[in-house]
Image 1 (tube, one colour):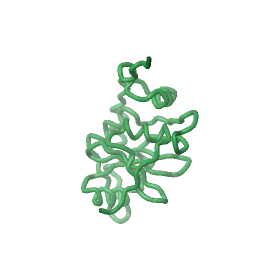
Image 2: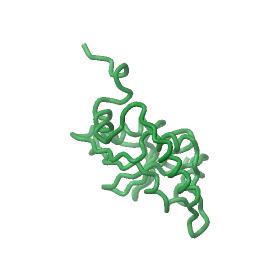
Image 3: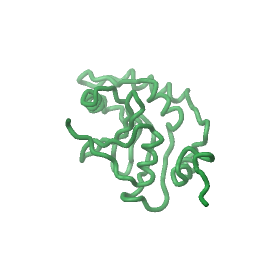
Image 4: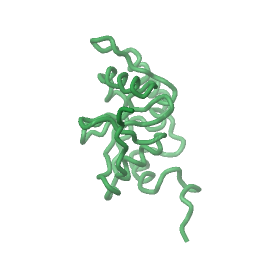
Length: 164
């Protein structure tokens, strides 16, 4: 007989373990730091005049997970588990790129963090959907930050974004 994980944790066991090892716990909420990041992003304008979008889904993700350095242990399902640093300032100089992605998806997109090992930028849209942008393309990680973290930490392959 298998225990029902959903009654004890909102994440699969390896994701929960990686998050807790990084300092996350249920109820974590650093809105002060999230607002500092929001102000920094709002105040930044690229040399070509591009600005960041800041919206509730991003601020909520930063408040709960911002600042965490997440390292998964063990093997991923199909890919190596990602190492993550959830700090939106990794995307400070990517306003144009994120704006372009937002226009392609008919939404706004804000930085979430990065995968330091691969320099992959993580981003979130107004609906809370999460994406990865790297030298090979743009990727959909999941409809929520919870699902995106699960995808990244468990080594599930993301879905490539394509035109059309």
